[in-house]
Image 1 (cartoon, each protein chain N blue to C red):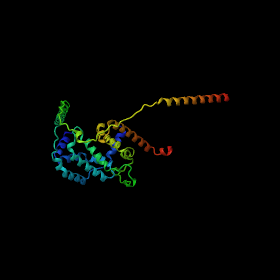
Image 2: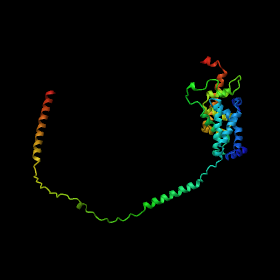
Image 3: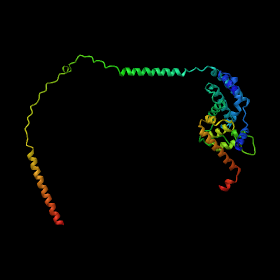
Length: 136
Length: 182
């Protein structure tokens, strides 16, 4: 025990705190007031193993039920009387219109357009070359 | 120890006489501890009464593997917390100087009581741990149980508490030091 510890013990002893007779009586009276509650036997909880047994059995039963549901063979579909849906609604008769279509020569205008574009391109190229010749 | 266990078993059946025997064994030690933690002597007395009441009421939960004093101090510490000034309390609401129950219980002497110094430099839990270890001679494990901390926390903080107290004592032993070195 070192010096500090000795001093701490000595100084704790120097703290003069004592229970007065009045406080002693108060404590005694309050203990008497709750003595009946303390004496009442506490209901014993069930042994823990029964809880584990019950929960285990519940789990096994649940697993068996799930397996039975999964492995159940598919029931045969019952033949139900067919209900004539179409007969229930009356639709007006649909008359197919007669379509007249003629083949069109679509390639000729495109070829003309291509010629025009090529001509424009040639003109543009000539203009550029001419400009370049002037510049350099 | 077996006598104590016999008293506990008798008290569990509602015997006030048996529990009063236990009260007589611990009341002065507990009050001395509570005086260091409450704002007034009356609060410490109330905390002591609550401690014994709660102990008697919940005696059926006491596990005999623990020391009875460990269990009792744990209840006392919890009760004392209800009689302490809240953290950051308004200084005006704190008890006036001179009404400190600890200082009231200490006879005037030439030197300051170390527990007054300890309360100044240590926080609540460390203070309680130091008290239980040195005054009540509890093991580190029991102290850790009472203050609801780990054993390693308790060991480290007990060591730091001693260092802090040593420093505080060496500072007070050299009063001119702070004036010289600022």
